[in-house]
Image 1 (cartoon, rainbow, N blue to C red):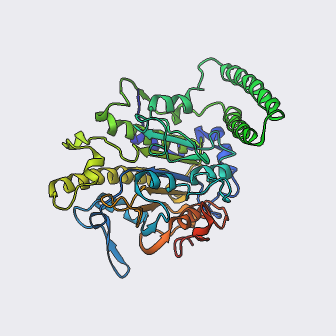
Image 2: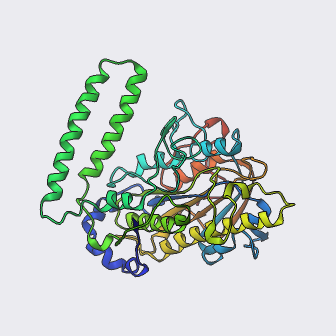
Image 3: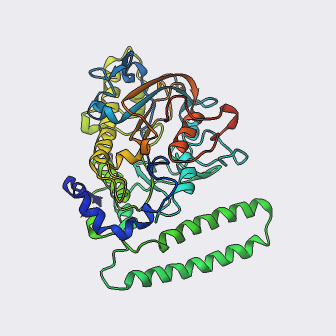
Amino acid sequence: METRIGRRTFMYGSALAAVAAPFLAPFRRASHAGSAMGARRLVLFFSPNGTIHRHWRPTASGSTWSFPAGSVMEPLAAVKRHLVVLDGVDFVGASNHEGGMAAMLTGSGDATSPSGGLSVDQYIARAVGTSSRLSSLELGVQTSAWGGNTQTRMSYSGPGRFVPPDDEPASVYRRLFASMAPVPGMVDVIRSRRQSVLDLVRGDLRDLQSRVGADERRKLDAHLESLRRVEVSLAGPAAPSATCAPPVVTGLDHRANGNFPPVGRSQMQLLLAALSCGATKVASIQWAHTVAPHVFTWLGQGEGHHALSHMGDGNAAGVAQFVQAERWFAEQFAWLVAQMAELPEPGAGGGSMLDHSLVVWAKEMGDSRLHDCLSVPFVLAGGAGGRLATDRYLQLSHMPHQRLLVSLCHAMGMDNPTFGDPSRGAGPLPGLLS
């Protein structure tokens, strides 16, 4: 099943905001994430297997910068005014595919670090997502053929605890919109029954807490926290208006290699719908996973993406295909940014949704041929509620990416001095936020 949202649906911004007012109410009430304090929402966009810097880097001369013709980033030219490109961010202490994937959003924090081993999206969701029906929304595009492991997961609710993305648009659709019951009162009945089950399970877990050791209690605490998040989702508004719900198109196999593009587009449309309706303030879309073997057949390619990422300069045709595939990912990010720039900000605040959001394109490695995590590419988009001045290319020098993760938190109105491994430095990236 595939879910699509027409462009015209999103352009009915004022009408959508009016019709969906009850669903948006808790979203508007978030006090510390307003425009005066920073971004109202965070969106993460991941694509795998590093880059080739000379085909990725913008050109710069003084304050003037641009995307070279034929480069990986050239498809972003149309949204350049909304971007900050970061060069010179290092994953200190991490290397290779798996190490980079584990460190990318966690800063390699553990249970003893101030961020508790959470990934930055989950850390932020705990601060800003409590008034939303969903504290966070994790969407994937063919992430799970290899199961859940360090290579295939980027979000963590604690050390070693994966937050799996949902790869199936139909499943995401049901989670977001299935409570639109056609029978009056049915939503309340369903919610009541689900709440009764939660009460029973929670009681059993609390009984167990008094009879187990410290390690087991920590695991039970994590389960209780998960139940609390489910309770919040059940206690939220029953459903958005049908105006918020995208139409459903059936018959799409979300696991088929050739369906990678339409599944990804459907997932991004669902992400936009969730943000527009106030269902969540923290959302991510994970395109595949590190060492992803997907073949970009829709571009006429026959070699897997991971294999292409390791083509040496002596294989000009292989390098060209990798650049072509990376340009395709850039096109997807540009589409997402452009859509958010056209959507009016729901509720009070004015401007576009992008003006009040922070959007991050992340990767898990730097040079794909060297398997290193040095100068890992990051692209930020959006005004972050006035915290982020855009249309910039920041050339940093071996800056630990823990400071970038701190910057993301501060852009969302938080004030934590470190993120992940605190020994790697404190404070946000210099010159990034206003």
